Image (cartoon, rainbow, N blue to C red; front, side):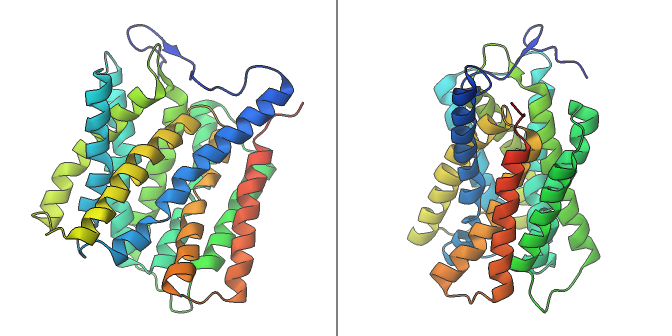
Length: 313
């Protein structure tokens, strides 16, 4: 694949690239951008609590649709800019991988597997990103990156796996497929960058809209008509759409376009960790010593992955 885009070539990701300037400014800029990018998976970690406590049951795809499509359409109205040339099919591919395919596979895994098993399968995403980064980006895997990714899987497993975890083959395939879809979306987003003169929010408007449109027919074919929405559900959908969709994806894709892909993928471990932490704080779920050890391992993997992704001076 070439990097030729609107109308002739792809510019390197622009707007807040921390790789310019002095060593001190690069370090501070990278740390700040990493912290902002980490807010996205942390916010996505609230999805489970919001879905179970506020939303009507049996409509997870509708929740995913409302998280993507309204935000994308709102940004399109604001920026009034559409893709051109090869970016029409690139946007469709990226929107499908990051949203349109990922959400149905994620929810299928959640329905057929215990939540802990589904989260653990999803935690393999950093390993898949490392594997895909070699042929697509030319980034060779290092022992440190692979080690931290494996540590993250172990940490998430300790946090979320229960003694009654069962395995369903279809659910496992769906979970692995969702992780692969998101991993491919992350790597291709970094490979293609964005068209010259196009800001990150404009690109996000395209991806959210494309992902939402891919998700639209699946939602109504699988779940039928939308559910009745009461006041708590309206608040939950508003949170998912504005914070979990619009704000989170703006932060996420901005970081994906600049930060090392393996380090960025490890930030995704924050989602199951935050979900488990909210279960303890809000719902009163008990935390066992092994879970606390899992928290420590997962956080160590996230931090270690960021340090391993930085070039040496």
